[in-house]
Each structure stands twice: as structure tokens, then as C-alpha cells.
Amino acid sequence: MSIVSFVDFNEQNMSLQQAIEKSLSLIDFQFNKKVQKVAIKPNMCYYWDYSTGETTDPRFVSAIIDVVRNNLSPDVDISLVESDASAMKCKYAFRILGYEKMARDKKVNLINLTNDPAETVNAKVGNETRQFSVPKTVREADLFINVPKIKYMSSVKISCALKNIYGCNPLVKKYKYHKQLDETIVSLNKIMKPDLCIVDGIRVTGIKTLKLGLIMSSIDPVAIDAAASKIAGINPQSLDFLKLASKEGIGNITFTPKGEPLTHFKNLFPSKTRKSKTRDFIARIYLQHLVKK
Amino acid sequence: MEKVNVGIIGLGQMGKIHLNTCLQLEDANLIAVSDISKKELLKAKNAGIKHVYEQYPDLLKNPEIDAVIISLPTYLHEQAAVGAAEHGKHILLEKPLARNSSEAERIIAATKSNGVKLMIGYPLPFSKPFVDLRHEMERGTFGDVQIAIANHISTGPFLGYITENGIPKPVPSWWFDKNLTGGGALIDLGCHMVNFLRLCFGEVKSVHSFLGYRFNMDFEDSATCVLRFQNGTIATLNVGWFSRYHKVQVELYGTTDSISVSSKSSRSWFNYLKGIFVANKSPTFFNEIKYFVDCLISDIQPVPSGEDGFEDIKIIEEAYRNTL
Image (cartoon, rainbow over all chains, first blue to last red; front, top):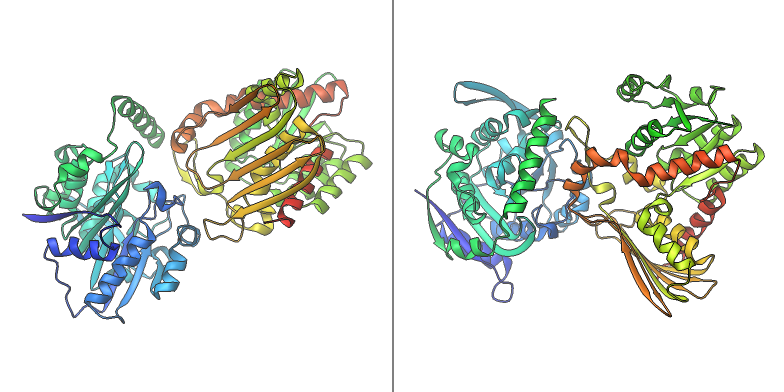
């Protein structure tokens, strides 16, 4: 069974770097000293500022960079990766979200995966095989770290570790996959499986944005998503993409929690109300209607 | 003129709203549209528009057209508006009038020398809560207004949009180029509020500003301006492109009473979904275009006029110069 750690981060008590170290020590994560290339995938969904809870805080990623360097070498090659999407251009997102400045300060690479040389790879999910492009930076990384957010999303109910890898698909017009979103998410995680997930749950997006102060780590993205969905008040067994990911051997829905109790974060999370559920239901039906058209 | 033959130049977000509005107006015949997108032109053709053009100069040559609504990126305003004036077309030009006062001056000169009317597309004077506010102010309900606060906060160009068929689209790249927009949130949103405040209080005596650069771009994503009006009113104007919600608010503090009026606010994605159903039937835009058409039929200069838009641009420029 996979281990998921829960750390309640309070900047009065410890630094972000210390909190991340603690989170990793709870899952007994050991850095492989042979690692030379590291790829870090934050969530840069659109141009939303980190304060909205929609995108990974560049300060969180900066602290991860410090942790990686402390445990490996100050000279380890680190790349922050994201790709263009239908309505977002990395060229602007890197700058607007503060990643351009942070990458310059920390002397790490900032890679738009859409422009990265890619190799076509087959991904078999169920009986169907799909082809995707795997960017060189992700493919050649010895250590691939997924740094997602926790947020509600009408199409898959919750977005966390597995959904964040969707952003490693270099194709710009990602909406083409919306009709088979569950299968696409699972396929991409099969061919670009992260070695480590560290969730920036300092601020989260439920029915509203809230400071949750959570840092959650695991080497298992399925376990991370199962924990995230429990925190958000969603039964992991009700999530099709999660069940499919588990069935395809990406990870386990059941997990062993370590650190703070999950219920502490669940009680704080801005969960859905009956009113917001109705609104989301209408939005989901309408979006499905549009996609079908 | 009994009915006005209208052409729309540019079928972007605003152009589509104007298209749907024109189709509802009894006194306007929407007979032509132009856009570089063949897909948009085909939709317009299917909606019953008689003439569709890929290049707007071809639309301007059509002698049947009395007036044009120009909904193009700001950097194309001068070229299109001067061209329209030279072809004798009356103009409703989306705000801001131009990127700077030099361009604005040339547009005004062209409309004057060709004897055509120019109105600037500011929706606020046609939005009911703000119409009511002005009405109450003119009745003297608030006494003399000493302090006014005008806020216009939105996502600005940082939110893509969902097309009618559910495909997310990025904001066009010109929005991220200061040379093409003329500036950031201050010119984009500030011109609305400067114009509305001028409608309320008359001419501005001085203006100073603070500009914010939260998003590390070379244009401001927020601005706070302090305006002193010749009538003594002091106004604070706050604009921003930094938010997930959209809110337009005006507060007046007078010697006898105060008031706060605002547009509805909600999370942007929901607004956008709602927009697909509702925006095309907005009473504000209906009132705006109807007023423009009525003015042409009655041979009256519409307001906000080109001169108003010009004055707004000059104040914005002054605010850019007087940063604190």
C-alpha cells in the first residue's frame, strides 16, 4: 500500500523548505544520488495568480528546488516544465505567474514542452492504444516531480496529480481529448509517470479559494488523488479516471496516511454545498452539450 | 433617414454582441459585416446578413451603408475610423477611441472634415443602475458630491474565452503588446470610468496615478488614479486586470447622502457560461446601439462623442505621465 504524507504548514513554525523536507521524510523518500536531470511540473493552468489557488505558487517550487539541490547537488540540472494549451500560452504564463523571474533567480531551465523535441509513444489503456508525444525534457529526466494543486473541476470532479500530467502533453489543442478525458489522463500518466508528487495545498480551490496549509507527498499519483478527493469530500471510488488509473497499475486508491490526520484538512476544505453542486451539474451538462456539438 | 443601414467591422467578442443587437433593432438594417475569419463571415451570412467582406475597405466602399460599428483591436482604430469617415459613414467606435491623443486627434479631424458623426462605445452610460445614479445625482439627491470612487476590476486579457461550440480560445496576442493596446488596465478600463466620472462631474483639473505590475508585464495590470474635477469633486479611480471576478462600482459621497452602485459580480467561468446565453441580449448594448441609431435618424450628435473620447484619452495620458 502506498504512503501519503500530510503536513500542516504554518510559516510561523517552519520554513517552506523544512515543511517539504518533513513531508518527504514521512514517506521515507530517498533521493537517488545518481540523478543528474530533474524535471518539475507545476500546475500553470491558465494565467490565474497563485493566490487564487488555481496554480502552483512559484515560491513552493522554489523551495522544492532547494530541497532537491540539498539532497543531490547544487549543480543538478533542473527544468520547470509546462505546455501551451488551447487558451494559454507559456510565453505569457511563465512571466505572469512569476516563474520567469524565479527560474532566473534560481538558475533553472524553464521549458515550454510544446517547443521541446518529442517522441511519439504508444499508450495502451484497456483494449485501446493511443499515441502521444513525449517531450525530451520529461523523457530524459532521471527524477520527474509532479507539483499539482487541489481543485474542483467540472469535467473530472477533482484535479490533482493525475490531471496535472495532462499538461505534459505538448499538443496545444488539448480540448480535442475532452471527449475521452479519463482515458487520456490515464494514458499520459502511463507514459509520463512521475517519480514523486508534492502537492501545493497551501491554498486550494474548492467552492472558493482558501488557505489550507497542506503539503502532501507520495510516490503514487493515484494515492495522492484518492487523498485529495477525500479531503475535498468526494468518494475516490466515484472517480472514473481514478478507478481506471488504479486498474491500469499506475497506483493504489487505498493508501497509508502519515503525519497530520486527513480529517483536519477535510474539515477546513471549502467543500461543495447543495447549491454549488446544482450549479456545477448544470455547467457540466451544458459543457458536454457544447462539446458534442 | 428613416432607417439606418449598418455595417459591422470586426466580429470578435464585441462585434458579435453588436451583430446580435443590431438584428433586434427595428430602425437598423444590418446589411454588411467584415472580418478576417471566413468562419465568422459564414455564420453572419447564415444569419441573413446581405454582404460579407474579408477586408473592411471593401465594406466601406458599399454605398448602401450609412453607418459602421468598428470593433477592431485598438491599434486598427485610426485606420478604420479615418477610412470610414472618408467614405461618409457615421461611426460607432469601440472604446478606447485610440492608443494615444495623436491618433485620436486624427480620427476627430477626419470625422469633422467629412461631416460624419462619431460616438464612442462606452456601455456604462446605458446601463440601468448607472443611468439611475446619474438621474438621482442630477436631481440633487446627494447634495454636492465631494468624494467619488469608481472601480472597474476584471480579469482583463488574462482570461481566454469559450466559443459558442465549447472550444477554449486564447486571448489574441495583441492584448499583450503595449504598442498595440496603448497601455494596460488604465487605458482599457480606466477610459470607461474617466468618461463616466466626467459625465457626472464635468471636466478634470488634475490627475495623478499609481500603477501596479503584479504580473511582471511591461504594461500595468492595476492603477489607482486621483482626479480633481473643476467643480471641486475629488474622485479615486481603481482599475485592475488582476481578478477572477468582474466588478464595476461607483460610490458617491455627497453633502446630503451617499450611494453605491455596482454591476453584478460572480466567478468568471460562470459569467462566461452565462454570457453565452445572455450577453448577446444585453439591454445595455441594446440601449447603446438604439441610441446611436436614433441620433442618426434625428440628425443629433450622439454622446459620448468623439471629443469626449479624445478628452478621456488625454486624461489617461496625463495619468500615465503623473505617476506617483
